[in-house]
Length: 260
Image (cartoon, rainbow, N blue to C red; front, side):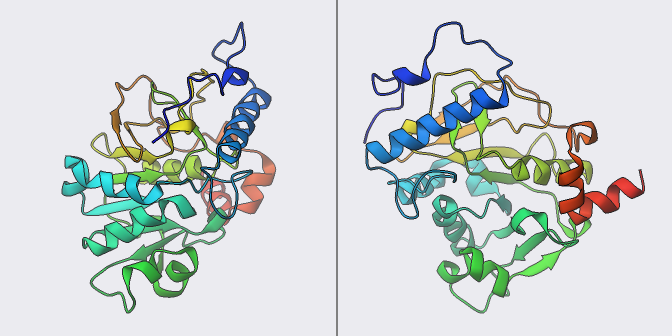
C-alpha cells in the first residue's frame, strides 16, 4: 500500500509561506492536487476522482478495518455519506444490524434523511447500500425523527493529521451535521470517522471555518489514525455564513429560517 502524501509527488501541495486562514481558492487547489495525484497514481476508480469524493482503490479494505474500532463495534446508529467510496462501510453497517441514516442528495426534501433499518429491509445490504437502493428501500424521515447518532462516517477529498477535512466543496456534509447538532442528535460522544486512501492525507494546513466538520479518526486500507482533536465541532447551523442561494435550495433551511 502506498504511503500518505508527504511526498515528492505532493511537492506541489507544499508552498512556502502557507498559513492557516487560506481562501476558498487555496482549498480548491489542494482538492485539485489530490484529485490529480490519485488519477496519476491510478488509485482512483470509476467514475474518476475530479469533482467528487474520490472512489479509491482499497475502499473495501478501509471499511473492513473499521471492525477494529471499539466505537464501531458499540455503535448502533450510524449516519453515513452517500458517496461511492463509503458504500462498503454502509454495506458493513447493514450486515452487522446497525441502523443507517443517509442524507437525501443536496437535502432537497423536508424529510432530509433516509432511514435504513436492517430489521425491515426487503433487500440485501449490498442493494440497500447504494444511493438508488437507499432511495428505493429506505424510509424518508424528518430530523426530529432520528435517534441520537453514535457514529458519523464522512467522505473526504483531503484530510490532515490534526483532524482538518476538505470535502468536495458543496458544504452539504457540514449542513447535515449542523441540522443534527441543532436538533440534539449529535453529542460529544458521537465519533466522526473518514475512510480515505493514504494519498488523501496532506501536510497542507487549511482554514477550518466554524461550520467545518473536524475528524476524530482517519481510516486507510492499512491503518487507523486517531486524532488528538484540535478543532472545535460546529454547534449548529451558522446562518450568517449561508448564501441566499443555499437557503433557497434547501427546503428545511428556509423553513427553519422562517421561524427564527
